Each structure stands twice: as structure tokens, then as C-alpha cells.
Image (cartoon, rainbow, N blue to C red; front, side):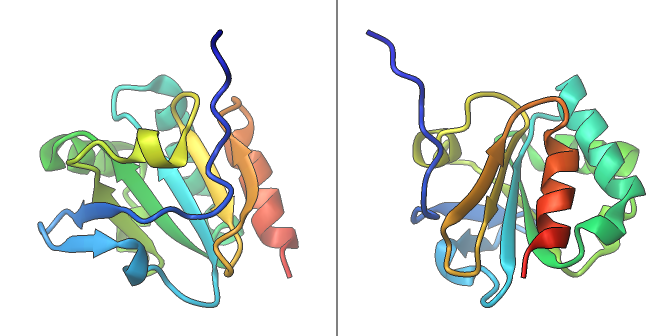
Length: 146
């Protein structure tokens, strides 16, 4: 029997790396803010469209601390961001992370790319989506959050 993965109901412990190679763990997350994780593959068309949408509609996401996570090398992540999310790279609430130990899939349990997870300041899952319109759903949820 194959059971569908259920997205992590609370933010799990993790060990990622910033693009400058510095470690970044769950203890480094912003406090008192919505926490929005974007798990992406630079070659994924849906990921490209989602990040282009975020780039064009940044004001809809600025209430959240955003963590963009990829298992791909720094060069590919930078090229992806320069192509699809150039404005996002300049924003202080956005952190680019590498999942070098391949923990994200095991711990957060996305079903496919892009995996979009919105957590409360208490680190509880508010909304998960991997649907084509998921990025728009996240913008609405972030805007409506208290």
C-alpha cells in the first residue's frame, strides 16, 4: 500500500546552508512572523512560473519570512533567481537555502515541485500547496493572516 505523504504539521528540525556556505537551522528562523517555505527545482516550469509571480507581486508576500530551498548547487540557484526572481534576491525577508543533505523531502514531505508551505509564527502549518495556483493561494493566505 502506498500512502500519500502528509506535509509536516509543524516545522521540523533541519540543517540547510545559506548560499555563502553558512549553516542555517530551524533555530535561525525569524520569530513572530509567518514562515513561508518554497521548495523548488531550477529546471521545473511550475517553479519558474511561481517565482516569476512572486517577483511580480512581491508586496503580497512581504508580511512573511520566506525561505527558498533547493537541493541544487549554488550556481544553478543563482542563475534561477537571476532569471525568475531578480527582485526577490534584494529583499531582506527572503533567504536562499541549499538542502545539501537532502533533508527537505524527508522532513517536510512535499508531494512535488514547487512545494509551498506556510507556517504560523508558532511554526504550525497553515497551508500547503503544490497546485498550479498554489503561489496565488499563498499570497491570499499571507495577506489575510492576522
